[in-house]
Image (cartoon, rainbow, N blue to C red):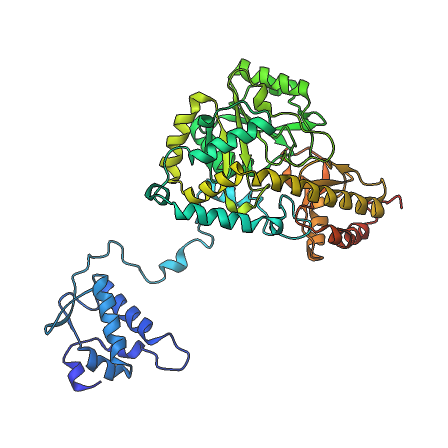
Length: 502
């Protein structure tokens, strides 16, 4: 060590630990790490004068600017204090409350939990798919046909007249123009009875569900969920400590048992216009019964109307909300299926008494944004571009739906049933009850095709519905036959389980 450097009393380990070999940690990172650790562990005591940058650079064989940069970073973080012409000194750092003992890390349990019990359960029960694109990913729309040119033009127009309020934190219930446009659209197409003041804009259905659970329920309150049903609602309600009660679904929709009817829940989550994932359409009679039951027991009905725009054949029944005479229905809608999922805009239509509370909670919990996107979407709806896009995509999806139905018939005849195939962006290819649809879905994934097993959506241990969810929204019509042939080969490879009629 050079004589001049020794005079600064810098410990030997600083030079000894510095690695000059090729491929080692970058010089500035090494020096910063060594000095910071020395100060934190009091090996470099408060008041110690560090070597001048030139001398330390010479001793380490590195550029002087590297040492200067490290000293400056340590000063910014409060580890040293420096003054022009006075030198650089170690600052007084608060003493550590706990000093590690040798081998302490090794004595920790091999699997010390990192997550809370609630967090671990949430992660273990997560159902969100890793694949969000390609044949036959369920729930994905055709984003390549989105009218980006129109959107960009409206986007530029909105930005030219942007106000400071639009570029700041959002407050309240969402863009007023978008709330007006949503209310007008729902009144004209879905039979929803509402004013713009009842509409609250959110960043997706998951946020809408989170708000509902936070504001209307306490941990332990019961909520009915369709079974099979939407895993996203299940995950939100479970994470917030609600008691999940799976309720069977038949051809007419939600079908609670006599025992379940004797134990009213706080809330009932349903998708009556296109049950997810079975596709069942809740009958008018079943709707009236559900509304009467909710009114009698002061239960909330959460109506998820996620893709009612796309039906192939008969027109959809009006929304359940439009029949509600007692203010018990909370209506959920989204633009994820009709435009593109990453837009992250959805909406709630609330009974009037809930609107103010939801608007305030939205600001309090999430500090909502996307005000510019909301303003663009408001113009997109008001100028008719949204309705035009829906008409175009309804024809596209209808053709893809028909192509998939034809492919199923070509490979399986009438052996495997098609469930819920008259609406939306997916259908279910039914499988025999004894088949492990999860195993088959994994085999299909190895063949490069994405599908999801129907059993994944079920909560009841005794439920035996088996099948494969096939999304056709993002698959070009001329690619459906080829992709389904690959899927069919995997299914047919399990011929000892499934017998075809072909």
